[in-house]
View 1 (cartoon, rainbow, N blue to C red):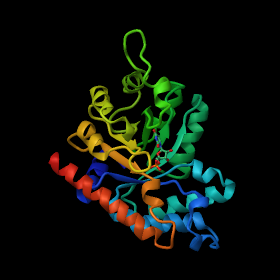
View 2: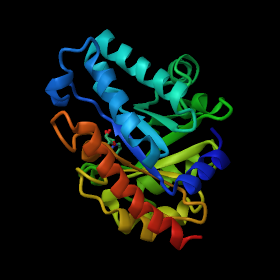
View 3: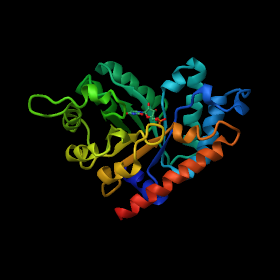
Length: 274
Ligand SMILES: O=c1ccn([C@@H]2O[C@H](COP(=O)(O)O)[C@@H](O)[C@H]2O)c(=O)[nH]1
């Protein structure tokens, strides 16, 4: 999916919501546990209930890999279900990959050829040759970690060099020589609040993937106040806050209510940039 197609989806659905499919078997409602593939059945119900309110889905690979082959089958079935039934939704594999060049090429082949997913989160810390193999695919996106939502983001990402440039700024500045606004986004946590002003100084036009609304307490309003740009430029993710809104048999309906509430807030924000 290219940038124009993504932006068209955002404005037509009045939403820049990404629903995180962080499906933990320990949190799947009891009513599904005797099914053959409870993880897939849970995802399918969540997708069917929330698709009208969001433009993207983000399965986090950790939640599937931890179940071995069974988990990867659920992952693959989820991707296939999305592509067959909701082809206009942008899919993000949150896998935070990145290695020496030939190994990165294999990761790229996995996510962009084997699964044909739109985008992949990538860690930038091994440098250019670890990132560029992901950028050789037309219509696919690299989403580079820049300023993450967790407390540990302060350990390295906010550290400045002797010229006062902080690591997240260096990552964004240098990586702009590798990819562009059509194939590279950055991860910036919703918990970073007014830091979005600083992000927009170094990445005024790039899309940002913003996790941390909901369970981590990030503010959608604050993210928009400092981060939204003329074609939106934001994909805001919520995982636990949506998919675990209820632990009962009404889990999908409860997820839809949470997703709709976020979509309505997003419509207000999109109206401001019309
Ligand atoms: O900085 C980051 C980068 C990635 N994540 C991921 O996003 C979701 C957030 O889940 P919630 O349940 O909405 O908190 C999860 O997959 C994280 O691994 C992040 O939170 N922060």
